[in-house]
Amino acid sequence: QAVVTQEPSLTVSPGGTVTLTCGSNTGPVTSGHFPYWFQQKPGQAPRTLIYDLTNKHSWTPARFSGSLLGGKAALSLSGAQPEDEADYYCILSSGGARVFGGGTKLTVL
Amino acid sequence: EVQLVESGGGLVQPGGSLRLSCVASTFTFSDLFVDWVRQAPGKGLEWIGRSKSQRYSYTTEYAASVTGRFAISRDDSKNSVYLQMNSLKTEDTAVYYCAAIRGSLGSWGQGTLVTVSS
Image (cartoon, rainbow over all chains, first blue to last red; front, side, top):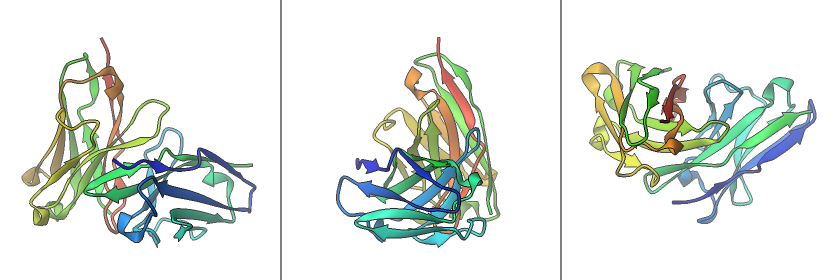
């Protein structure tokens, strides 16, 4: 089973830009891993932000975007808002199974 | 968007069993992939397994950590997916979510708490 890695914590200033990444110990992440990104706030269920690497849901704020960056899946946030402070998780598909990253705690400060 | 509602959580002793249910509001339930995800207190998300759609013969996949103890089944006539958990351990204590997260679907249930304790 693959190990999926994310930055444990990141800080961004209000209005600033930050990139979260999602890597795999089995090699470069590709679109074939069907990366998803989720946001979770305390006491709430996760909310899906990005699916299949780059696609946004109707409820995904335009300031979020997904991409590949240096062999990893990436979630970029441009123009951070206080309400973006949350935990962010990625998930990768591999051989029928799916594996979550450990999550990134994003602080907007 | 699909609405998902879990139920069946509660307190169970180590070694015991529990069955969780997930009901989906969709007219095309047989087309739905449903994942089970859990989150231990203060920890991250862990993928447990998945039930694929009718087109994929309702194949199930599991994480290594639960293979042999947990089983996913479904009843399309009830728009329901089930997670049967056997030989429960204290480390299985978590909030359990069902989710329809495939393709353009991104729905999650509200979660149900399972506590394994004597």
